[in-house]
Length: 390
Ligand code: HEC
Ligand code: HEC
Ligand code: HEC
Ligand code: HEC
Image (tube, rainbow, N blue to C red; front, side, top):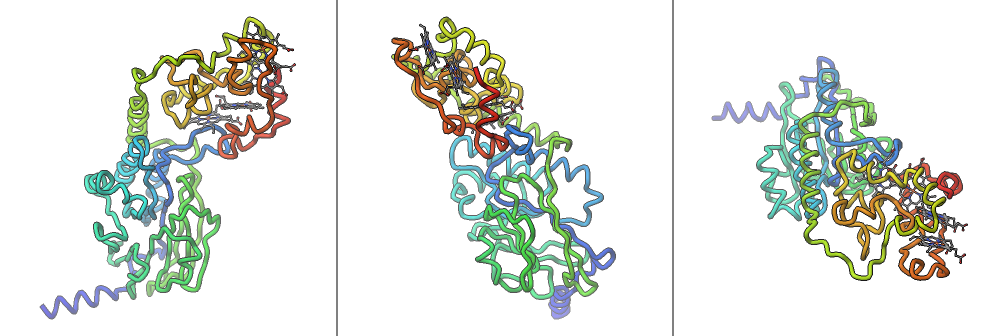
């Protein structure tokens, strides 16, 4: 009995000699994924990310990355909506497939817990940490013959171990915390470079999982962190996706499509949107010019990637979505697919009744509803305006 107590005590002071050989450990990390399963692909500049690529990257580079830990610092769940819950499900299942060593879940994630997140986490078997009593706050991971302390509790560092804190707080709140070697945040702050404090290296997960963080620690023979390097691994389309996670996302797309109930759609009385066909007879040349623009093909773009029934996409790739008489689905409102005349010029009812009634005037703000920083980072009104002139 006494012997084993002494042995345990000794163990807890063992230096991180597992790293003594090569003296490095890479911490691969995410945080603040917020249910983002994959990038929308609207622009080459905003097309990095995605859980299938993240896993694919690790699969392909496992040997070179070793020894490594894969951690998620929290705020990974989607919103508490039917679609958001489907996302959360995929996130958790993909964490298990990718082989996360630890994932943290904070308040927002756990709001859903009773009904939803908890059972999924339990079923997936991923080691989960949280600030609530439902899950442990800390976990000790063995790496070779040494032990790493990973925790969501800022007070729970352990002497003589490599201490990693997972937190959802902003940098300003954690930078004075003592005892930690590494602090990984899921605050959603973008820290391009790690913040080095007195004792710790602080990093933050790339918002929406656009990139994978890789922090490589140099560890001395007596277990001290003596240096580090950091890089962001982009997750571009050149990376071969993990097939299992791609299948999960494809299934997710089908479930999202099923959320949309065509039989709940009602033919609007006094329709507000009529579609380009009602303009063609009088504006043939304008119609012909429009047909050559990418606006006229925006729906096929979604069909090609299996997202043509995803409200998060159709809102900008169709006409009048979410409004009375606007696009609902390809089956119920086929005449309102794509970014049509009325999307820019406004609903046509009054002009159709009397063409001397002018349509809404157009300025840049019309375009910016869809050409956002995120979806269209290269947008420049004068250049883009020229491209769609008719
Ligand atoms: C806020 C509006 C908006 C939303 C929401 C949106 N898109 Fe887009 N999308 C755009 C705009 C604007 C472009 C054109 C960007 C450019 O070229 O500057 C575009 C372009 C694209 C393209 C590129 C087409 C090509 O040929 O290069 C793809 C693919 C795409 N979107 C898919 C999606 C998917 C999938 C979703 C949902 C997950 C989505 N979009 C949601 C506005 C949006
Ligand atoms: C309802 C959303 C929406 C509005 C409003 C909108 N666009 Fe677009 N735009 C899109 C989408 C979606 C695409 C990409 C279509 C595709 O390729 O699938 C696009 C593509 C384009 C492209 C092609 C980009 C390229 O590099 O070839 C240009 C140019 C453009 N839009 C200009 C404009 C201008 C100018 C306005 C305002 C007068 C405007 N758009 C308003 C959604 C919109
Ligand atoms: C991407 C937004 C957009 C789409 C889609 C669009 N237009 Fe336009 N349209 C414009 C802009 C911008 C102008 C320039 C008018 C202005 O500056 O107020 C314009 C001008 C016009 C004019 C008036 C030209 C003039 O001499 O004043 C007509 C007519 C017109 N569009 C018809 C159509 C028809 C018909 C369609 C569909 C087949 C269509 N437009 C689709 C943006 C759009
Ligand atoms: C019955 C023929 C007719 C139909 C149908 C029609 N227009 Fe027009 N439109 C006209 C005429 C004629 C003018 C010029 C009016 C004027 O100068 O007073 C015009 C002017 C316009 C203008 C430019 C001036 C303005 O009013 O802002 C736009 C934009 C426009 N139409 C868009 C549309 C769109 C979009 C549709 C389909 C929803 C449409 N029109 C359907 C006949 C028509």
